[in-house]
Length: 317
View 1: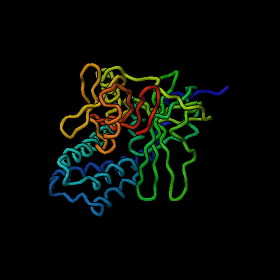
View 2: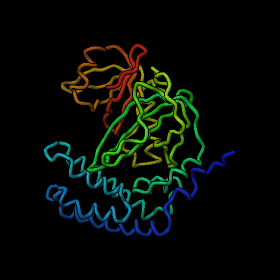
View 3: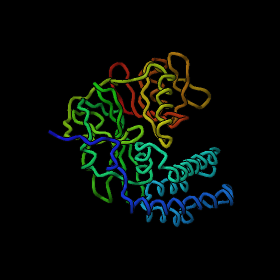
View 4: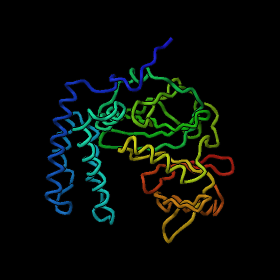
């Protein structure tokens, strides 16, 4: 019989030496943030070359998650009218992280685990596998890919038929190597899902997965945007660094306001769609004003649609 580890175990925190190294990096990050604000956003050079030094220091301090957020600043388009807002969002999150690190001993253990995970500490997979598992049939709600230099990243979103819980499988592949397991949108999976510990767990590992016939409907969907936003508010209150949050809404329809597509629920609440219009037009032309169920990623302001259910069939967008 397997002995289960508590998700609040200090086993999921870095050791003292690594914490000391990370603390030194946080001091450097704090000073860099002060320098940026002293120079001013419009005057500071957020190019790759300028950010290389501070991001390299973060990597040396085992703060890989911080380094990735800093590097993202160089990818933002200055011509975008929302550029200042986007930069301030990232800098604000980094400042919040600095403050949390300085006061982390006043935080709950689950919040500390989330903080170190966000900063770049990854618990061992063998330790994660000692946690309780959820046996279920898992619908693949959407798959996204990203790349950074020599690193490929895959985001696979799942939803359990019985548990109605949503989980993120985060996989990495380096260079020309492929991902360890090839999840497919046109299949579902039976297996044991184990969440990484944290203040509001989303990332997980799927063990002993067996492909099964595709599940065509979403097991758990909110019937109003208000109910979804209540859950989102709870998640953010527990883990303020959540950037992308899964959203599944039923009985919604597409509408337009000028050039902007919106989702409308049955209570006439609206949610801005973040997808390119070229991706939404075919769906809008087909479904028109019919109601359907949608799965996407909410970033606190807009939703990026990944898939939808219409007339008992599940489609990827």
